[in-house]
Image (cartoon, rainbow, N blue to C red; front, top):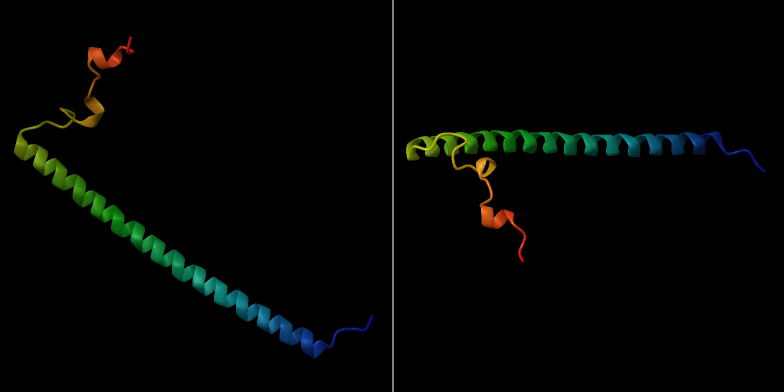
Length: 82
C-alpha cells in the first residue's frame, strides 16, 4: 500500500470540517426556529386560556363547573349495554 498524500489528507480534512460546520449552522438555525415557534405557541395558549376564563366569567360559570374534567358519566352511560 502507498501512503496517502499529505496534501490530499489536508484537503479532505478541510472539506469535512467545512461540511460539519455547515451542518452545525443549519441545525442551530432549525433549533432557533423551533424554539421561537414553541414560545409563540406558548403565548397563544396563554392568551386562549385567558380568553376562555374571561368568557366563562361573562357567562357566570365558575371554574371547574361544567368543564370537561368535572363531567361525571350518567348512570345509563356507566352501565354496560345488555
